[in-house]
Length: 151
Image 1 (tube, rainbow, N blue to C red):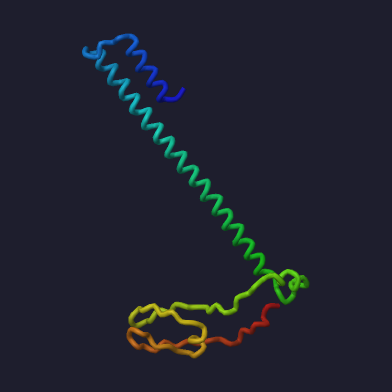
Image 2 (image 1 turned 90 degrees about the vertical axis):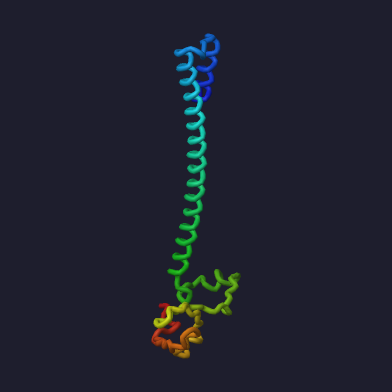
């Protein structure tokens, strides 16, 4: 039996006994039953909220597990060396690579703190002027890294 059912049962007992709620003991019993009903409703609301939170946490946990599996799968793929993999030609035939996407970088001007977005070509040029304060920002690029450094 739930708390709300028990409080309703007590109310029924009180009404069945025909307790006079205008006298001292009757007022006390009526107030106690009213308070028990209020407490049972409050507890029912808390239980419903707790169940809703629990359901949402379960859903978040499932989504985090899926993200973790996705990220773990990506790391495994990155560990495989494409130039050393004998099956690379068979696996990559259906993959469509988009090499047109530019990589963008955000640089903060040390003078005015303006955030400037630049691409790899701008970095390769070696410098750029801040559009806000005209400070020249210079870049050094290490060209020692080659694309054949995979193996």
